[in-house]
Amino acid sequence: MMEEKHALTPNQWIDNYADYLYNFTISRVNNSDLAKDLLQETFLAGLKSAKNFQGKATERTWLVSILKRKIIDHYRKINSKKGQAEVRIDFYDDGENKGSWIEERVPQNWDNTSEKQIEREELRNQLGACIDKLPEKYAMVFRMKTVQEFETEEICKELGITSSNLWVMIHRARIQLRKCMEDNWFNN
Amino acid sequence: MFRNLKITCDQATTICDKNQYSEASIKDKIRLYIHLILCRICVKYTKQNTTLSNLYKGHAQYCKDVKHCLSGKDKEDLKASLEKNKE
Image (cartoon, rainbow over all chains, first blue to last red):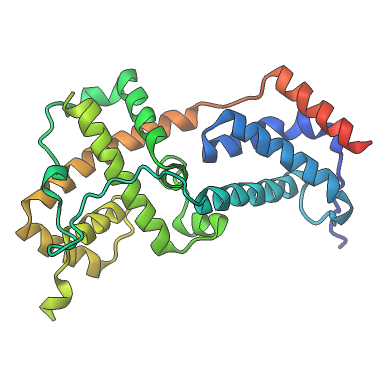
């Protein structure tokens, strides 16, 4: 039986796929201007490589694969930016007691942990603000793993990183988030 | 044998974070629990981490419920850009 071949209809890309692809992008980069730029680059790259489309995948799957490549390129760019001021706080000693908590960064008792608080919009806003303060690469990996609940393997494949890299980034993201929430919510 | 089970606070909290996603191995969990017997600070971190994980789950659900759409103008701009590049 002949397999159905899919065709490209660039005139309908925006109407058919723009919202889907925009959602896909914003869930990873969480910045609407950047998401729009990546989307535009994707459509333009799609136009350029339309002659290579073999029709084996659907048009949407093909556009998603181009978009994923654009997101990886963006991730690699932010990951390799030389001299970028990364807001990285050390929580553990690097000297004689290597790996032990630094005294002033030890977790404090929290005043404000009732379950009801979790429903509050203010709390959600504070959490969003703390995630936005993370270095971009940590925020991206944290969102993909914790918010979008992607499988570890999928993130590693999508971003071209090892699972050890991923867990180090998740740990750094979570420990900075913990501190931010402690300072701005639980003990504020 | 026991020397292999001894870990630092940095390693313990990394395992604790991994465990929040149920992805820590049995060996890692044993190392974490032994560390927790000896380290009250990491016990506190672990308890607070569970609270935070619940918070993140609530946030994840909220984010999934929100659907982002492009405005009509954004779509028109995209169409114009595509048209320009077709020529």
